[in-house]
Length: 327
View (spheres, rainbow, N blue to C red):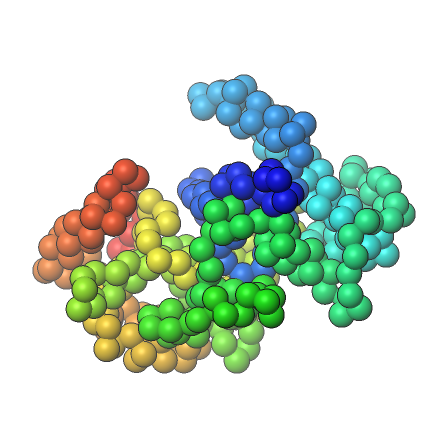
């Protein structure tokens, strides 16, 4: 903490993106307002580290792997409860029910993880617009953290997350960000289902006059709950899927690479927003995608790595293509 009470630790706010056994951690608040938030105090953080790092055996038996997963579930739920403790007591249960939908999930939470201290008041002041989760996150990010902790302004993805009026002078969406913002953080409802058809991670190469700019198109898969290890496909909520768009390569296993020229980006965005089916996605791939059968596949692959090494030589590494689309 600084003398003014503002957090200066660059690891105080982290964004974690995960697809199955592939995860990436970003410093700062990346993407739009998330469904849930982990609030970690030191005891919870210490238990998490010992469970997932210190005592974890990569070659352990099934029992070890299962117990690690179960214990991590408990830590996650405690961290969520700690976050809810900052919200008004009358709203905590409704938020938790929204995070854990389904009869089995509700029963599990009621009997195995009942609320504790749910009637205790919060010391945080809120206005009357009822979006208390959003209000609290914005208070923390914009009034208790500086840019070192919060990260750079996410001009592409922040939509539900709103910059305060006092900081609007810093909010300028322009250039490529303005176009890419049209496909970021858009729920895949009936009128805009395009995010449902994207793979876990697609990379978008934009060829500009100043060189190659690479963006990650990350598919956020909504769940009714994540209370169980098995049967994940039965608990998906695809109508609430979204895309997070972030400059840079955020993931080691791309599923598809798209190549566009800077002046083609508006047409790419229009075609993405018009997607209504898996066939439409394949049309997008046919027009802009880099299929394995492309004669220039490896030259494009090499050009990407040259750009990646130039932009971030410390964290540079070669992309793993074992999960790349075969079609």
